[in-house]
Image (cartoon, rainbow, N blue to C red; front, side, top):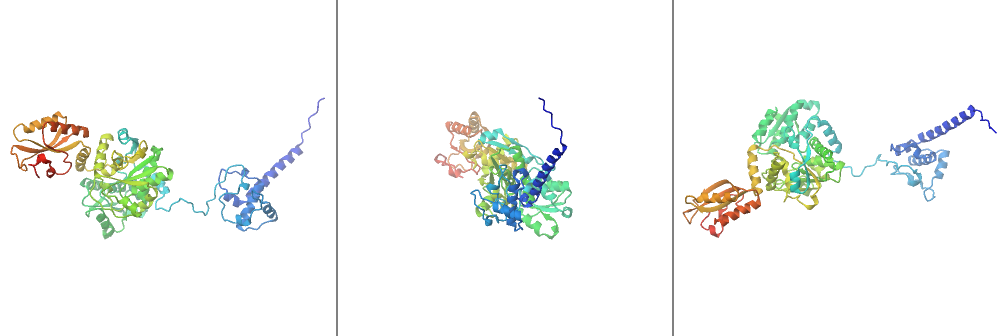
Length: 554
């Protein structure tokens, strides 16, 4: 038997549609009636379907109790239905707090966990510091088209020597030769328009002055720099070529700064501190952001420290994004101002003596910079003048770059015998910025010689030879036979008080290293020459002559 199909009933379909619309309207009305709940659960991942209407109603009642709102009849019934997971009625006092970290388990759906409410709550771990990560990000955006995005590349030769995966960030390739351009550009761009017309002033003997003069010229901002009388003439002339008003004053940077701040002729000019101005620190922090972009899996960042502006910015940027990365500062033994500040808990004066790393010779770290750096720097180590000289030499050989002493201290700490030549760092990915390349040509030659001597590739010794014809030639022939090259020879006749037919020669020879040095020494000894070996970088120490040199005194 064939059953006929039921006729189409439009009335029934209309009733179904009305019912569906009514149910949806009830749900929407219920949700919109609880604004406090929506303000509490603000996570975009929580949809309305995460709670049933009954759960929403109960939560709304809870919030109304806390807010002291008038409860209706239906609300009172909902209150009476509130139960804890154990089935007991909930104490009103337990819901009268202003904020809820998260709703009780009984009110959670089977969906996602809602976000915590941070309104009016002081977040733990958020530090009150003069420079923030937000400042660094803004600075990086502002200066990105005006400074060089420098490369960070692995150096295979230095990686082998140090036993690490060593990456070098070439900040010396900025137009003026140092990282200082980042902070200078950021500080100048933040000036009010009226101040830009008046101009700025700074005390600097080198890199900060160059950076400020260069970017001041690009932005049309008048720049005056007070440079101490010890400032290298090449840098003084370069600042003048960049259009700055250069004033030579004082024996050192502190006297130059005092002159800038006290002389009435500079009234109205904005002083920009090269290592402590918050805008300078934020600009330097852009280096940290670039390091994380270029070496995202970096383990350790080793940063040169002078006034602490660079390490403050870099540490803030890196630790904000990757707190597990270790930040290590390096300064010279001749000016350990950051170490002194860490020990005292505040910026403290440090004894300063002349150093190859003259760019780091800041007697007292900046208070703003230290306030930032102390939260993020893991430790600080010291390097000697000898280690700095060897580092400059190694960078010349393996990076093919001329780096000033202050920019080379990071590598100096990692080389064999340095304070970071430790098992914990072997095999780690390490980045260090080569933050400057402005070394005077007149100084470079002396630095290279000191580096060769410290590396045992230049040796100096005293040798007694016959003062008769052929005596000197025989000694030089012995040196040549050992494969060494004579760098310098000095005859000493007047201080020989025994044999008149002998002479002492002070000899400087170039060798390939410690093993070659010992080969040369053995060859001369085997030839019968009395030796006073390893005179080092001091004047001839003939007063320390052995017994066989008893006739030879200074």
